Length: 114
Length: 114
Image (cartoon, rainbow over all chains, first blue to last red):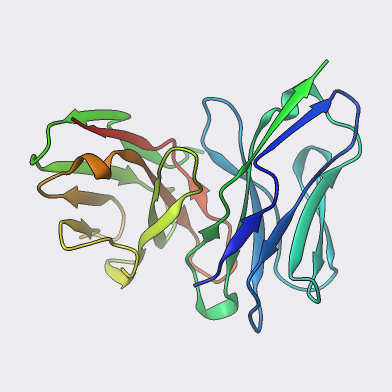
C-alpha cells in the first residue's frame, strides 16, 4: 500500500495571503493523486486530482497542484485565500490503474484569519 | 442529485454489542468503499465492492468486521462484539468504478463504543 505524508499538520494563514500544502508519497511505478477538502461540519469533497498528462492541475475554488514524479510530491497551492478556505485538507493516492482504494495522509488543518 | 447517505449519523453502543451501519450510494455508481477515520488521522480503507462482490477487503482489521452489498446498491457494515477501539467515524464512498474515478463521500457515521 502507498504511504502518504502531509508535512504540515496545521497551517495558519492570513486572508488574501498565499498558501501551499505539502504532500509526499512513497514511490511507485504509476500513481493517481488526489486532494480532498473537508469544510467544518461537512463531508469530504474532491479538491482536484492528477491521473495523467499535464503535471499542473487545477481544482475548485482557485486551488492548483503540481505533480512532481522525481520528488514524489503533489503539493497544492492557492495564491490568495479567503476565510471560507478554512478547512481540513487531505492528500490521497492510489497505485495507478489496478488499485482503487485511497491511501490518505493525516491531513492539514488550514485556518484563515482576517 | 442525491449524494451518498449514511445512517445513522451517530451511534452509541456498549462494549460487546453488535452494530450495523448503512450506506446508500449515488444511483448508478457500481463501486462502493468503506473507510474508517479516527480522531486526528486521515481515513483508512476497509473494504471495496464492485457490484455485489467484495473486490478488496484487505483493510478489515479482523473477523469482527463484515460488510455486504447484496443487490449491488445499499451496503451494510457490520461490527460484532464491539470494542472501545472501534470508536471512529465510518465513511462510505461511491464511484463509477473505473480506476481514477472520483470517490464521492457520505457524511459518515460517528460510532462511540462505551
